[in-house]
Image 1 (cartoon, rainbow, N blue to C red):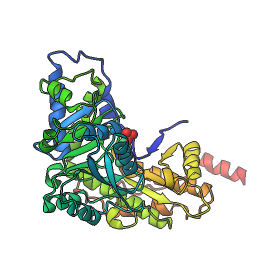
Image 2: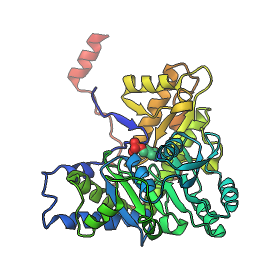
Image 3: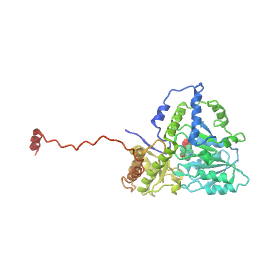
Image 4: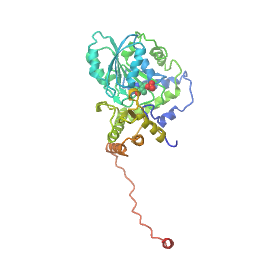
Length: 420
Ligand SMILES: *Cc1c(COP(=O)(O)O)cnc(C)c1O
């Protein structure tokens, strides 16, 4: 198909040309004396992305799922109690992993479309007088339902109760796109991957660990080997890795961090919020609902859009892909067929997103949904026009005078007469 594929799944996201170029290089010796310059700068600078001063970043060759595993196995022991909430596919999968690793998970189930239940975390932790709960898990942005949770609120609960449990946060679809403050919120393990806000291919599982999290490593008895913090710390301390790192991914990550810091993290978050808000205006204009049950839970990185009964959202996604080269996110597990998702994170601006909104609108009409043509596009356009930064005054060349129509030549007159 000619033209670009419009990638609007919530990860992997578009890889900007700058990052592609940074990654396009010959392989290097990862044991050379030059290598630590690259590895150390990336590991140091990642702290700014997590907003931590004393935290330590780890890079594993995996996707986000490997970083989940690293956070659990390096800090906990078999049969340790863990408190977690479940309100979507990703929060579910992290809990499932914890259970399969042999942890005792106390699950706070909430409706899919709701956020992490902060008050229920409080109750459970307040009732845990003997401090049996060793870790608290929160999914910051539930990508399956387009819901962002109040991680700061859970952090506050732990502080107020002076509960010593580790706070572990899945920030795979929030970090580098939605404000995340590791130190301020008291997060002990923050997990992400390379293919979402960091605008890279999948392939790096990234964990940032607080000093408190690192101090539990020696007592933690869950089996671990490839994702071992100890091996990694020992090698990283000298600027190397315990096994062969992906050279292109390290160059790509260095460029991604540079791009994010050049734009300014706060500007990155504001851009994501504004793009998301325009998308939500489109959804409203279509007469549809988000899966997120309350505006406070609206995600700035992904909108999960419910389709009416009688419509299969999988068909919208299929038509969008085959007819318009547009990739939309699917409904997962119990949301299969009931919603489609527009990912709006990473390297993205208004006009790119209008392509996704326009394509979704066309595909919805193609499968028989009664959305008014152009309604979502117009709503998003007007929102973005209305919230655009004012332009600085600039001198433009004066407008040319209106052109006078040239008098017809004798020959033209003659032909016109003949035609009549
Ligand atoms: C994408 C994602 C993950 C990890 O998925 P991988 O495919 O292993 O990278 C975990 N949690 C959330 C919230 C996600 O969006």
